[in-house]
Each structure stands twice: as structure tokens, then as C-alpha cells.
Image (cartoon, rainbow, N blue to C red; front, side, top):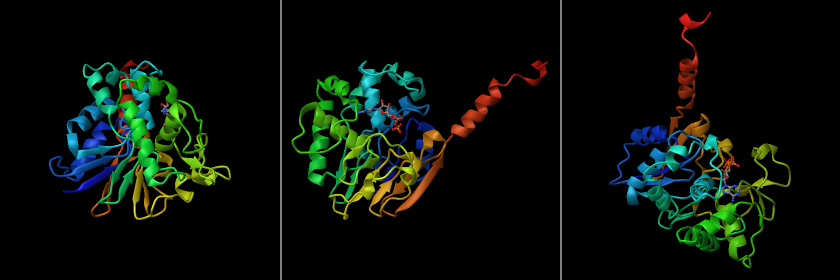
Length: 289
Ligand SMILES: Nc1ncnc2c1ncn2[C@@H]1O[C@H](COP(=O)(O)OP(=O)(O)O)[C@@H](O)[C@H]1O
């Protein structure tokens, strides 16, 4: 009965299966937490969704910005960017089923027994846990309703970037989505900065990584997030754990075994795939003049 937490899979299906094989993952006994961004960039988004959906109740995942973008592309609201490698998924016979399952997944996971919280980007310092749960539930309700395309259409954009309980309607939903799925840096008052993508060391003052701005979540909780591959899991306070280690960029896929606090990593297949495609693109020596 183990709890495994894995960072952003981003379509790296083979690496996901290899990592789960390393720990003898047993879907009948174990629980698998996934930090979101299951899809895009890596080659196997379709297989990842099929596999994770097939695992049923042993999975606790959260949606990431790329998962939301997929929903918008499938709804005809946003453009399918070739670098996301989503076409096989968009054209699959079971795409409808997969998309309808995906849009019913949460944006925040809370386990009171284990004192574990998980959101793709993290929990903005402007929210206490009750507000985070309320705001996540509001987005989840609209995403699982029939009017979800209206929300996806209004989701893009960086404003508003400051939480007040008076926020309402689509602006409130946009704030909550940005806070839970896209946030990296905040101003010292906790206001979101949606522009900076630098490393924490090179970010312009007064920006700080969200987890360095004093927040309102009790430090009894461990907060798990993904989204920020360039951190390589480093630089967070003890009770905040970043699990995205950039598998789709040639990094690794990281798993944390919660009960033992042991980490496992699986190297990306990307370098190998690129080397193989370079070899097959090269003309046979006998053909060269
Ligand atoms: N509210 C939103 N505003 C802007 N982009 C969004 C939003 N939600 C999802 N996205 C998607 O998130 C992805 C962001 O990609 P990018 O800016 O490269 O960041 P990342 O580092 O997460 O890959 C794009 O596919 C974009 O369409």
C-alpha cells in the first residue's frame, strides 16, 4: 500500500511505465499522484491518457495548463501547435471519451490524513486552504459542466493577477486557473506575475518564486507541485516539493515514494530517440558521392 507521486509526464509514456516498473507499482494496492501536464511535448500523450484513465480510482491527478490547453484545442477554441505533438490524440477514435474524462479531473488534491496538497503550479500565497479548495471547486464545476467551452474560451490571459474575494464570473475563474496551473513568480504581496520565466536567481526584483512569499497554508501540510522544470526540484522550503524534472526536455521523470521519502528517477528517452532519427535521416555511406 504505497503512495507514489510523479512529476509532469508530458506525453513521456515509455518513461512513465519504466518508472512505475522500477517501484513495482501495483494499481490494486498503491495510489499514484500525478502533478498534471500529462500531455503535450512528449511523443505519447495518447498512450498516457489511455493508461492513466485505465488505472481508475488508484490515481489522484490534477490538471495542468497543457491539459487545459488540450481541452481548448479539442473544443476548437485554440490552435493545435505542432510542437505539442497532440495530433494522434486529437484524431484517436476514443478522443471524445478521453477528453470527457480529462475535463472531469480536479485542479487541487487534498489528503487530510497524509497532510498532502497538490496543485500543478502550486497554491498562491494569497489563498488559505479553504479559499484554494473553494476556487478549485468552482473551476472544476464549470469544466465538468456542458458550458465548459465558454470557460475555455475565456481562460487565456494573465489578468486579473490579484486575488480579492470580490472577484466574480469569468475573471475569478481565470485568476483561479492561472494561480493553480500557471503561476511561477509572485510580487511580495502575493500578486501573480504571469510573465517572468527566468530561474529564481535571475528573476527581476521584487519577484520571488511563489513558495518564497509567506503564505497562509499551515506548514503541517506538504505541498506538491510540478510545472517548473527548470527548478529541477531544487530551492523550495522543506514542506514544498517540486517534482517536475523536465523529462520531455531530455531531463528525467521523478517519483517520490511518500512513505519512505525515497526518490526514483527515470531518464528521458529523448536523446536516444533523437540520435536514432539522426542516424536514419543520414544517407547510407554507399550513396554519398
Ligand atoms: N490561461 C492561460 N493563458 C495562457 N496560456 C494558457 C492558459 N492555459 C493554458 N495555457 C497553455 O499553456 C501552455 C503554456 O506554454 P508555455 O508558455 O510554453 O509554458 P510552459 O512552461 O508551461 O510550457 C500553452 O499551450 C498555452 O496555450
